[in-house]
Image 1: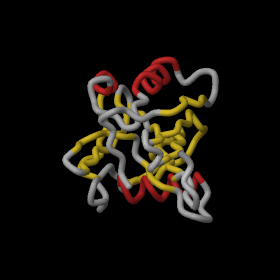
Image 2 (image 1 turned 120 degrees about the vertical axis):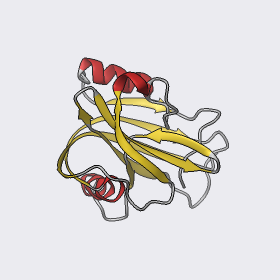
Image 3 (image 1 turned 90 degrees about the vertical axis):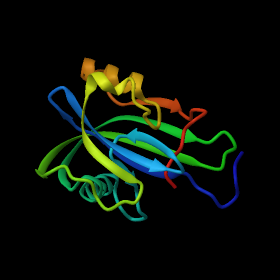
Image 4 (image 1 turned 45 degrees about the horizontal axis):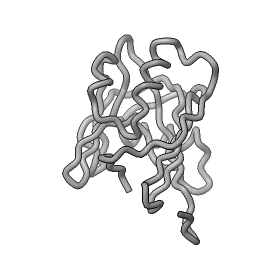
Length: 157
């Protein structure tokens, strides 16, 4: 499964709660529409915190304060052609207004009622752990969620 000269992509994401809602971003790619925690790829020489601050500014037009790490998971395509290491951090908005950034796949960014998350196509599919954490306050510290890739998963390149 290992491909010579290839490395996993590192992606950071923010868990931002506002009352009984959570900030999510909707992407469309190759005819698929799916939701994910807002964030994106870490650039070479950039810290995880710097990347998350930049990505939320670009993707949702907001300034954030990055908090603690909530969980980590791998998204590995069944054929091994894609490998993303996802790191989700707690964060809070410190400025700006939630507006969709200029990303061509990004079509919507908004606070979604937590009760609706279970019925949404979330990538990677971390719904169970996310909902449990939101309900129980993410007790127990950061968690490794393992490998996540569903049959119908689409993932931005």
